[in-house]
Amino acid sequence: MQFLIHSKTIAELEYDGKTGLLRVVYKDGRVRFVPEVAPTLVMKIVAQIPVERSPYLMRTAI
Image (cartoon, rainbow, N blue to C red):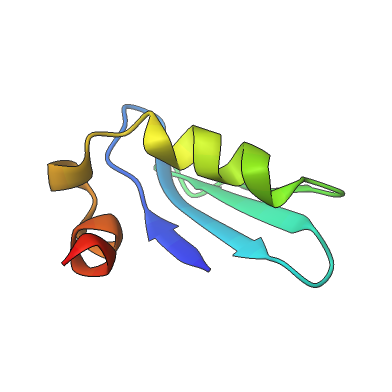
């Protein structure tokens, strides 16, 4: 799952549910990989972002 994020530092989150690997892309171009992330934690992170600011979540909600 890929989420475009509108925050001050993070541009994008990409989550691989099979491996539990979370890829974080920062606005300055840095990339960080976080292993063994639970899907519920990813949803909590994304849920903190207002739905109208996340095109992916808005499409999913509709």
